[in-house]
Length: 177
Length: 312
Image (cartoon, rainbow over all chains, first blue to last red; front, side, top):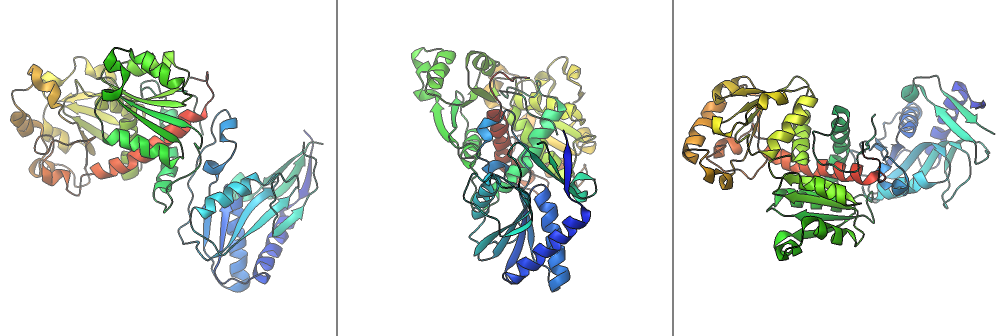
């Protein structure tokens, strides 16, 4: 399958830094917390947390969300996806939560993440940060912070590679036609 | 990571080490769910789980029921006293009638070894064995393995002693399968009359000296002495059993201070364990109960997730 590189390491670094600035511009760091959706959302959330610390000098709490148990397609898949731990060791109630994922596609992952989050408490506000928005939403959900909008055909695949999770240098590919 | 391919969970004898590790890893995630304020996830929403218990059970039935409810499944309890088997209906007919109401999974406990196999062969829905006769009690062994892994960080190389009525114990058999598959060194200990002949073929050592076992173990799984099975005079008296194989503070002091004591419950205090050991800091009996819910959540999640006909 043919693959075209859409973002390289530098583009990803700049996108994360810009999103960190936008997150701070849109509400500062007071009561802010960053939660990454497994797997690559966690890596990006950690990078955003570090960028916010560099800009603001303040460490904001961060967490990891596994949405497997909240998926609405569990009965449609043959073998079940592996469940991993959710690690949120702070109270999310009244916090401004920035939810982080790598690719924003149908919106079903984010719906599941919203369901999962409200089981942990009642945040004051939930915002969404994604590295790539490729369109084709099936639910009325939008992102607040976007690294790059990539118009795609539904048949194409967008693949994000990050050093921490994939052991490869950072890049984003679009596969297929 | 390996994928779960089994439609049923009938025993640990049928599982690979990878299957067992998958259950334990999945259970670790489910333990987190039980520690939340809202102890419920929608993973099995719309599924119906039936508890078909032909033998008395409080702990296992409640544990399965809580596990199913925490995954948002609907549950139904059928006790033997109100079941039509008391009117002469066969086990399979009873189960088929329940299945005809479109249930997804049956958790079965039965006094006859092999009965979950009969049901698994005759039903379209999934079957989970919650204890069959003297054969297997897979979820108890899985929760024991989970507890051991939680306490020691590993199973491989652990020295585990299983003490008591090995002959009649389905807990012992499932634990032996599970522990040996994961690389633990298992020694069984108990009265010679309650030791099955040829048990060494299962990959375990036999020891008749509880003090020696305590000195050489990292963990002891003590078994409930089934008083109902002792009428055939396997033992001179419970008192003598308690004196020879029961674990008290004095005997326990001969082992490592890191040694943990486990028991599947319910405990006969003063027989298998003295009260001070059962309630002591080396006892992990209540941790086992807590972990039981997480392990059963993992089992229900994995078993209900596969399509029919994918039994491996």
